[in-house]
Amino acid sequence: MLTDIEIAQQAKYFKINKIAQKLNLKDEQLELYGNYKAKVDYTQIKTQPKGKFILVTALTPTAAGEGKSTVSIGLADGLARLKKKVALSLREPSLGPCFGIKGGATGGGLSQIIPMADINLNFTGDIHAMSAANNLLCALIDNHIKHGNELKIKKVLFKRAVDLNDRALREIKIGLGGKINGVPRTDGFNITVASEIMAIMCLAKDLKDLKNRLNHIIIAEDENGKPIFAKDLKAAGAMTAILKDALKPNLVQTIEHTPAFVHGGPFANIAHGTSSLIAARTALSVADYVVTEAGFGADLGAEKFFDIFARISGMKPDAVVLVATVRALKMHGGVLKAELSKENLSAIKSGFANLKAHIDNIKKFGYTPVVAINRFTADTAKELNLVKKLCEKENVTAVISEGWGKGGKGCLNLAKAVLADINQGHAVYKTIYTLNQSLKDKISTIAREIYHAKKISINAKAKKDLAKFEAWGYGNLPICIAKTQNSISHDKALLGAPSGYVFPITEVRLSAGAGFVVALSGSINTMPGLPKHPAAEDIDVDDNGVISGLF
Image (cartoon, rainbow, N blue to C red; front, side, top):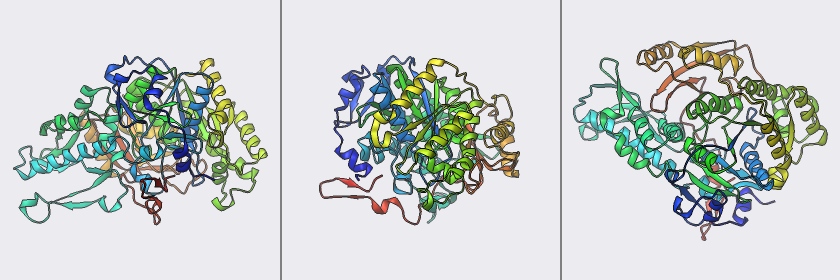
């Protein structure tokens, strides 16, 4: 059996200008990166979103795999096979997971975006540019302190960033070795995809908005406890110069040659989890249907899509697809990974509690999802039929999706179900909290309504910081909760549908430029570490430059 990267390498590629023609994009609107990648100059496009927006989310991830990106890509290819003018709007993969545990993030089997290796690695350099802009600001902060600290910086709040999993960088000492090396202090790194720069890039409407958001990054507190901004260091101009080209969305293709905008890559467990506003707006202006995805489970990516992205952008979904697998349901029902190939109907019934919790949550935002059962080869007919029947009891349509093995052909029924759902027009977009609620009330609402917690607990420092953010005038911002992706709760060991527990807030951070407050829960960290056996150990390049080991 061919690996994903071997399938991608053997695929037939169309030159990217031919892909662009499917969306009526002209050569002068493209900036080519070789034959198969291009940046799209959104400034030359009349961006008036008119297409139908389809959000793909999932149940709580497990070690069994769910295949949300595979379903998203297969769905888009299925819509294309139905002669629809369709495009994808997906996130760029981060190098952290590529070299860590997860591997690549370009779909799988016959439902992939290509060139797979390029997209998973350096691509068009967007994330590198974000790291550089982030670290330029950090260098300017420490340079200012070294040369007299005119702004009276007392506490630096802005961290450095690198797009790799490196736990040793979570807390570091800098400026050591004498005055020539600056002023010693404690610092740390975030992974770039969890940085405020990434969030700003993905929520900026244009170059002017980008610079304005960069100006409003709070970098530090002064001796009086007042915020100091990036604009106080005159940093935003140079940062914008670094990010100018990265702001333009990237265009690639699926194996079946469906256009795919791939741009921005915030994680959903520690960031807001959605590809860029500019990519979505551009796609919706040139396609009749746009498929996007929100990272990890619906408790993370979908909640943030509704409460942050859609609220800020004004682009609301017309349909929601909820991805599930028989394997994941069995794991949520208590089955070990080694036993997943055995038929187990009772475990599916038990594990369905997790899927039901996500169905109920999505309904709170005004949508009834279409459940896509991403089929694996070991799934039995009895198991698949049971999942469909359990969904029917919740008045939800469930469709078997076979994008991995059959590409768009295996997602035709899913595409038809989604089109039928859109045509019914029942969706009424809602948020679960209002911006005029207090920051604490917003956090509590998310924990109670989406995570099914009984109440929240906030440690003393986080309480103090929330009060400070409100005193600074940021009480009306939405909330971005950072927590484990492996449970609806804050505790990765709690599978299924935990409820009635206390949801702890251990830290809060203000992302004033991005426009939200980050609330961290449990043991979550914004700089991941590598596993004992990193995926990087299996990645190689032969003498002809052919990459292997990506998956």
